[in-house]
Image 1: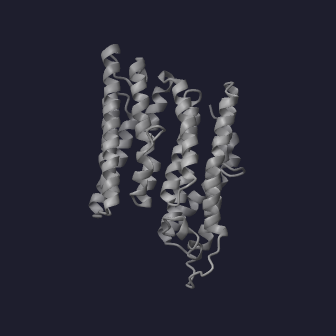
Image 2: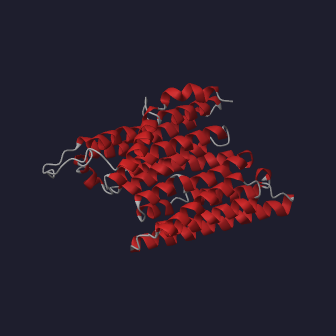
Image 3: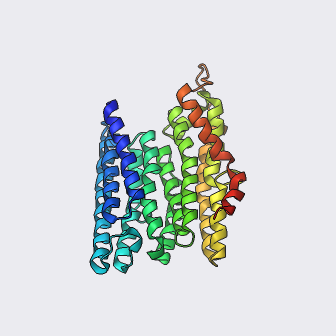
Length: 346
């Protein structure tokens, strides 16, 4: 891809996200989301492979439909209340339409079908942007409108997302699809607590990004796209594949790793809200995700193929990326001791 075109796309992504996050007017928020959609399309289709073109087309159609719904929701609210402010979303029909629009943009169940397919058709680096950076503006809009949203609807969608994210990921052999279903499952955890503690949703999203970034970067470094190749990739960079197991277990939410922190806080908050059955259900559903993370970890570090390729082990990665990956790996594994600091923040 042309370096100037890539720079323009990445700059537009930053611009679109910043506009949406900082705006308090619905039209400006919608504009930022549209800039984001148009900026990521060249990055999705840059390989000119038929799968990439298909992924870009699917992404464009889905995001255009979601943006139209979001605009219709804000216009309906302005028509009935005279308010264009994001925090003043009060009309019930507008709230329902907004929930649908943001769910489509994020890939929440039952609007999740596009996300694994789009992620499968792109490169790992573009997939990383789709799974982390491009989810931030819609989540910000959900946070700003959270007092007006229907808690029952959000809980149903959250439990369904966690269930389907774990269930559909069990049978996958492509690492990008596994990470896509993992993202859907984590979105369920973020959505279930949105109305009761929006700050906790944001903390969960930040920690999810911290854990997902090093996994995508590691898989990109060792050039692994399938479970069959991940079992032979340990010979390339043994230390990196060894830490990949810890990162996957952290994403699964096992203590004493970073990923345990958001699940622990969410279950605690749900129990405080006297929603113990919901907390129990979502905790049990996360075991489905744990199974395929364990399978990935098993393939990456414990499986030894009978005829391993004899070549020199690449003990060092590229100097420019080594420090970046190392920092994120450390954060994705060792942040649990900082939990008291989160408890004490106002």
